[in-house]
Each structure stands twice: as structure tokens, then as C-alpha cells.
Image 1: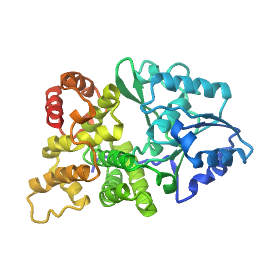
Image 2 (image 1 turned 45 degrees about the vertical axis):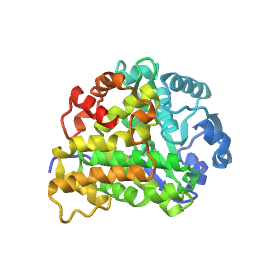
Image 3 (image 1 turned 90 degrees about the horizontal axis):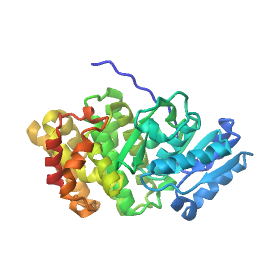
Image 4 (image 1 turned 90 degrees about the vertical axis):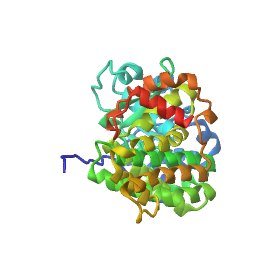
Length: 385
């Protein structure tokens, strides 16, 4: 077995109603001024938002709120929010929402102690010299796993790219996982975020950098998603199912934080930046097509995925058992109403060369189990179109 390092730097608080303890948790950080980041939907439509802010204020802590994070947050948004927090002089960040508020919060926390625009760090023109301000993440979706990872993705509107910045210090110090916050997710969002988590688990499990501890997390995440995602889409009020999906998302996040991602994410980031396709939808669209391309590189692991998804492969050859995983993912997509083709989400065939050009530069692409070329990517895009 190869050498590996497994670290879990985020403390996880899981359970129904745990979000209401955020004030007590902020007090443990000895915080005096909390900067609270969320999106407009949470701020305007969710009663939990007011409860959480009140919980913090009741501890005698000052709170400044930014509640206008957009989907696929841009460099301009991150820089603007960072400047607001600097003026407020916050000493702790709290993020409530899905991947966009959490990723924004990570970048903003980094810019409190490091000068310049986030653009400089995304494009590696500037080194990160100082640790970020501490961060608490409270996810309201079960998909991104951002509450336990050290990466933050930002969209560069100029280059039409989604680019990640990674640094150990932006890994949240605390993740509060409260299934109650996920009950109000509509079926479509439940489906797309659930498939995002599945993609994380599958790509990490077949990664060239896969690690045994992360493997265990990924396989159990796949089992939980296969068994619970259709039910969560069908009946979002089922708190047990919501809790299982929240755990699956967290486990998949831990898995890919250690083992990396691959070609699905390389393409999905381009689709998000160029066409504003929601990240979970982009991943779900590409996942079975990339799996089909990758199967030959590690049939044993794809067989494991099929079994984890509940497929009976006892009488199949290794090859057929491995490809059963692709069929299972396609069926799951169909069952929960994910778009079937790139054409349906507005992707243009004339852009395939540009997508391939941008995808091939994805920093985690070496983790993909099969070596890939730009020509391969164009071929996969045509199959998905």
C-alpha cells in the first residue's frame, strides 16, 4: 500500500436542530465581530436565517450580514464582500447556504489576511502568505461537501472559467450539519445536489490518488445516495432520508478532499462558467459518459460502485459488472428528472473545442483514472450532446 496522509481538520456537529447552537459555537471561538454570508433566498425566505443571526447576537457578538451571493460567485463579488468585511473588522465568518455562499466565505476569509484581489490567487500570480480568518459553515443543501474541504471555486467572467483556490487554512473550523435545514429544498435542487455528491464520491473513489480512508467514505456515500436520493426527491419531508443525504454529501466531501476529482469536474466547471449550467446538473449530465470512458482503466473499482448502488453483479463478468455502474447512474438520473443531454441545457456544439481546451487544463485532471486528450473530451461531449 502506498504512503498516504489522512487529516480531518473540520470539527463536525451533526443533528436535528444543531444549527440553532451557532451562537454558542461562535462564543467558543471568542469571536467579537461575526461576518455572516448567505444568499438572498435564505435571507428573504428562510426563518432559520433570522434565528441564527439572533442566536449569535444573544451571545453579545456584533454581526454584519452580506446576503447577496449569486450562483457561481464571481471575482467581483468575492472582492466586494471581502472589502465590506475588512471595513467591519470581523474576526469570524459564518456561511449559510449551498456551495456558492460557502465558497465565497472561504475566499473572503482568505482576503482578510492576504492583500489584493482573489483573481491574483486564482491565477497563481500571488502566494498565500497568511492563514485565513476562521470559518463556520452551515450547509442547506446536500451536495457540495464544501463544509469539509480546503477549496473554493470562483468564476472569472473575463476568461469564462471557474477556478479553485486551495489552502489548508480556508478549510472550515466547524461544520454544522442540520438535516432540518434541508427539508425545504425543492425536488429539482435535491436531485441536482444529490448527484453532485454522487459525482464527488465516484470520481474520488476511482482517482489515481485514491486513499484507503477516503475510499471507505466514498463507498458509503455512494451506498447512502443510491438508497436515499430517489426518496429525498419524492418526499423531502422525510427527515431520516434528508439526514442520510447530508451525511453522504459530507462523506463525499471528505473523500474528494483527500483523493481529488477528475474529468467530470473538468468539463462541469467549463459548462458552469460558459453557460451558467448549475454545477450539480453539469456533473450529473457528464458523469455516466465520463464513467463509460473511464471504466477500462479500473474495472474492479467500477464494479464496486455498481454494488454500492445496489446492482446484483454476482453472475456477471468483471467487465459487465463494471459497466453496470454506468447503467445504474443513467437510471438514477432518469428516475429523478435530471436532463439527459447537453443540448437540453443550451450547450452549443460549436463550442466543443473551447470546452475541451479549457477542460484539459483542470488542475485535478491527473487524478482521472484514464489519460485523456482534447480529442477524447470532444468525443465525450458529442456523446452527451
